[in-house]
Image (cartoon, rainbow, N blue to C red; front, side, top):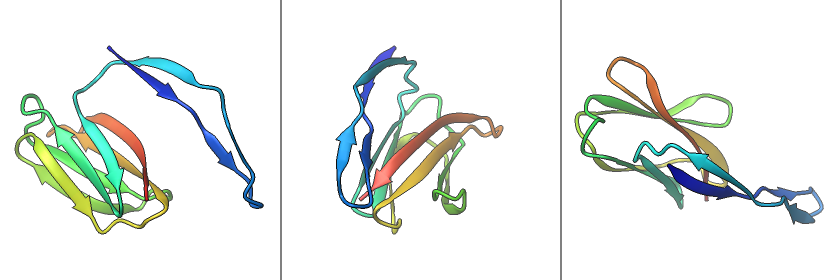
Length: 107
């Protein structure tokens, strides 16, 4: 079990912003790490349990931006993604069951 804290920043069109209060949730960790950097997303899959998986990156409208097939765990850098946008990453098993869903902000 992993504890994760979330805060939402809401920014108005005039540039004013405010943060929500912090909410802490308990998450059952899959061991998958997804983090974004300038124009790319790094996905780290554990070496056990993620053989024959697919990793798909979607844009905010649900269009597929990248799709990779992975034969074993490891680190992948998925680059060439649009900056200043939200992308969604899914990791599916060989049977098609979605095992991980993450939303990330790509700078």
